[in-house]
Image (tube, rainbow, N blue to C red; front, top):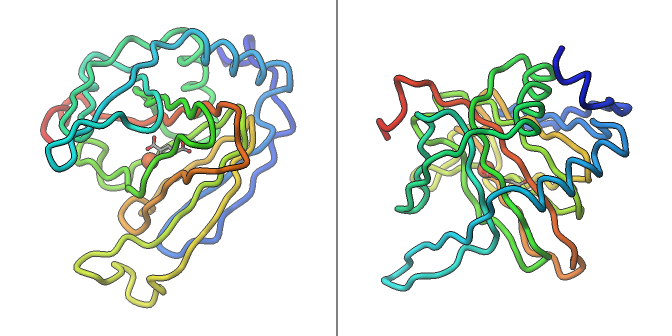
Length: 222
Ligand SMILES: O=C(O)CCC(=O)C(=O)O
Ligand SMILES: [Fe+2]
């Protein structure tokens, strides 16, 4: 396959995260050490990072991270009222998309890139459940750089968990290491939300790439 020529693979350990009504798997040591370092520094330095803003109660605030959006031309991304037109994926992102597909068995045609500059940067609770992603999206989420803590909690509808027997206070915590790939699939985005919280201990950047698939016919229907 194409990615084999560019990326030497690492040990590639797979861990299943126990989650009722969800399917989450973590691959660690995915790329060989030198390849992971090269991917991290290249993408951190070369992607078109932008400081996006959101409007809350009439005030315009910087979101607490930098973002970049790549994909096929129909993959338009709407975030809190901001619409991002995709740039075409550079070669390295195409290679990581192909490797994500080889590991998960699913296709990916767009990627949201997040740069957490230090422990003050974060992402709040959300589910990746936009209609254009389809009912059971497969999200391939790569981490490079600083280790950051990723939390999952049940997604409540009208104050109740969609999963009747599930404890609404259930929490799952995963420390996402450098050179890892978190796969979220099945009903995960219907039943669980996730976030990356702030961390006082972290003063170096973390790069995150979340590969997704948007069908051409569904684009823009949200
Ligand atoms: O940074 C992460 O690990 C999570 C990113 C995320 O949830 C997203 O981009 O939707
Ligand atoms: Fe997400």
